[in-house]
Length: 458
Ligand SMILES: *Cc1c(COP(=O)(O)O)cnc(C)c1O
Image 1 (cartoon, rainbow, N blue to C red):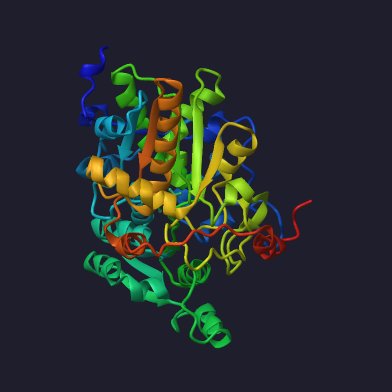
Image 2 (image 1 turned 90 degrees about the vertical axis):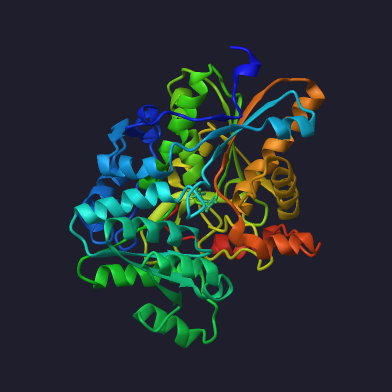
């Protein structure tokens, strides 16, 4: 098919939307390592996980064998309100860069929460409702996940209790108010409403909180309140499963025009958007049917894949969650305070960690001023104001396109544009004022995090 016929936006018909999620674990020879009970160091059983998570989600978490899992009709209906997400050909960016490369991005920012997180939030809320629960608890840092979950819970008439890292609660009042508008209760963490919160406040009066602490509070409320469970917006296998909708739609759209990508790029925090975007392509790669260059992009200030260790670690700073085997900087790792670009999680999805360790994908770390330069360049020519997280992928997509300019190769590049950056204007302001700094931790800086790894690693 000739070049001219590829539109700026490739949309799917509703009837072409995936009706099943794809479970990449089914095609992995080396399965991701199981979650371990921190007390016994035995793999977590469904029953143990069921005290914290919804039953159906536990089944999905443990399912390493079914290649496809049906998307319930109610979730398909919700997806149709904001999906299919467009696959956009970045003609304007290509022209501006003067590259022979063909650049496409899958845009997940077309919903009020402003990111891909709604794809999993709606699934998790659905299963909670189906189980007859009253509500769910969670933590949120900057607020994207809390926002997505509050939208999903209001749709299914579920209570939603969000513990929001105190510094964000105070500095990002708009996100907080979006969540409250959707009916969620938002508590700054650490709070006096939980035992663990009181303990942390007693030990560290005046602390502005952390994600790890907010997780501990959310889990405590879930396990101690009848009819509640805890939900998480990234990292877990179940979240990657739900996010496979991104990759499946992308693949259907590309197939429609006979386009085969050479390079697929995504930003990586806990790994859910990247895992979702690459899943059907990775499946082909694992089955030996096709080959793709797959690149995870992370901040140089929080480099879990590029400089972390592949080891069992705590998923949270409070050490209440099961142990996961993943590329990690240690649960004690805290990114530099001047890091503004998101993707601050210390670990990485164990599925992606295994695939990376087995050589099926590569990883690159990028510094934040370069990320914001790419964000600005993209915004000015493609119109969309990208989230700082998404801009990590933009940065590497531009780098690859410029390489093609040098070599004359006409590679096809696909990247995930995970969301919009309207709530990140303090970070943009720093960049615009020229006061944004780069920070690359030294080996010395990373040592305390590695020293905090639990002693189960042989
Ligand atoms: C949360 C978030 C990310 C990172 O999370 P992953 O689980 O790694 O996908 C990336 N982009 C946006 C816009 C986000 O909100």
